[in-house]
Structures are given as structure tokens and as C-alpha cells.
Image (cartoon, rainbow, N blue to C red; front, side):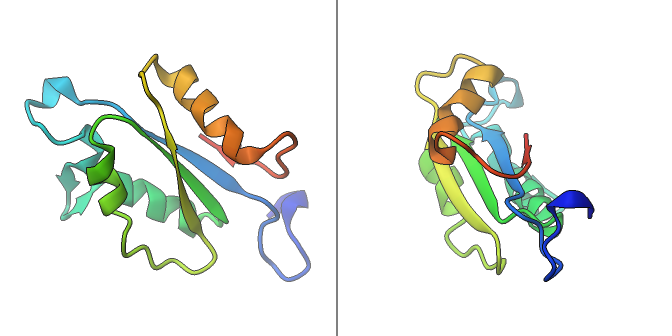
Length: 116
């Protein structure tokens, strides 16, 4: 697990940012693209669960278009040790801007690694 491992065996400050603000125009649906189901589960939920399984203590989901729908997907989040937070990207100026929208939640000096 590398230098970020605590003696207890958990990761120190591993976080993730999930970019989930896109409209999904080419999908031909009013649903945000990350809310579409793949194998019975919304795409964004698969990603968040993978982050939890990788040891992320914190997952920041950047929402925009249809944010109420995306937020609702996490109402019953039940992964101990991983908390979900939301950052809003309005207006949507692309991928780099989405990461900037999440930056404020990490404060001036984030510790640990951040997966994007």
C-alpha cells in the first residue's frame, strides 16, 4: 500500500474526484449520462464503489446538469469508511474546470493522494 499506509492498515487521506456534471447530449436522454444504468446500476455508482474498494476515505462527486438526480443516487450510500461529498460545476467549462470546482472542498493543503 506504499507510504500512505497507516499502521492500522488503512490509507492516509486517499480521496477521489468523480466528474459527473456532463449532460450526455449524445445519449438521447434527459438523464445525466452518469445516471444511466450499466449492469443494473448507475455508472457513477460503479465508479464510487470502485473508489471505496480502493480505499478512498472521501469521494467528491462534481455535479451539474441533473444534479438532483445524481445526488439522489447516493442517498443510501452504505460504504463504511468512505464519505460522499458534492461540488457543483455551474456553468460547465470542461474537465479542468470541474476539478477546480472540487478544489475548495480540499482546503489549502490537501493531504494524501487524490484520484481523478
